[in-house]
Length: 280
Length: 305
Image (cartoon, rainbow over all chains, first blue to last red):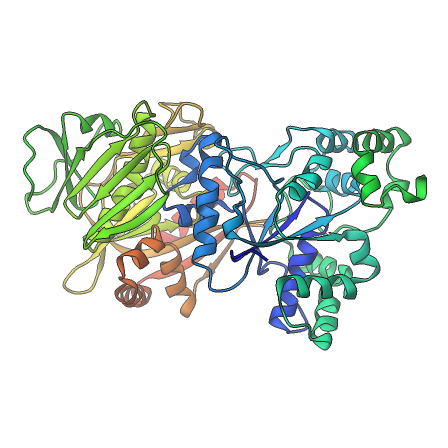
């Protein structure tokens, strides 16, 4: 582990990041339930918080200027943290124009990188973004894809790049990293979240672990969203944020052409992560 | 008081008199109705320091230099040396003067207000028909400026936009001082309000300066609305109660970390607890991405009638 205080929860959107955040909150609070609208892990791209750490309004900065000051904001965030800070990010790991990592090593304790079969990501993301499946495929395949690019957004713009580069970029960071596959979280959540606790240096209490895993089961999170809403669901979304959480759901949704376009663009990384085993 | 021989202009806002030199007058936003200010107002000079070479490393944030002297760094733009009496602007050579202006009249002025003991809140304020003031607080993007501009169109006088500075009188009442007589609105907000696009705040940013006629005297604060955004649903107004009232005032302090940098946390907490007892406070939550402005204006006007 590095000397910083920040653990980045890094993922492409709709890969299980929020599930990890709910688990961490449930384990820490140990209440047997978790409020999805009051999660511990903040958004690394949350503009009001960045403005506070920087001492000025980021909305007055042009995009390149903003990227330049992010390492300073995260440096301040880590420096003033009294304990581990979990920050969710959908950015890929990248450098500023001056060659400095946007996510500085000095501010970093570690990275929990959450991964999911990009074909399932496309299906979920198309509902989340309120776009067609083809558009979602285009976005996963685009090397210049950004989210929250509008200035008047409470989140700053985030550079996703394409899915493969997003996955690989965090590997290039050289930061201490735990890889979590969504599919493994679904099949054996206890084992996966036990790994998470070990990685962040929290003592593993098996009873607490089981209670936290139960508190943030997909069905419970979905029921809570239906009852109370979830503030991170996008206005244009066509389904709940916690929609189905399926593994392999793409098989009955994507056309052969859509699935082929994803595999053709991302086969090396998909193979490395075991997402093509059943097809090869 | 320092003497600066090239005084070019002065005007009053936030209960202070701002004096500018021939070179720093270029950093004053266009204002059609600047006030001259009373003789008894504290004076703050804005002067130009030595220009910094391009690529000069500037650490971001507000840092204590010595007692009552602070440095605000905005990388790529400027360094502002701040005391209760003088802001010295060291702009980056060849940088964007519009950016220098924005951070000067934002965080740098906010730091001066904290330094001299006023309380800047991140809020926009209007004068209500009963002669008292209502302040709208919230994070960037919550809709403070747009709401107040719409209330202005609805007939209420504006007191301040974005940063509202308050001061307590001898009886402990809180007064909001008129701010700068202009606001900054996003392009879509201008369209919503039927206003033309004026000068952009910076080239490449879809936000524009708009004149904002202000009332000319401090107004006693009686109400505070916290604006929030949520996903879907209707507009909801709910009272803020208990300790949440103090928390809201601390949260919506303009640049609350400046208070810690100045080492004034205890005094700040005490005045927040005091103000929380004086105000009617409510939270208005609106659905994200929907045009709810007319409904919010109607709700506030009805509430204050």
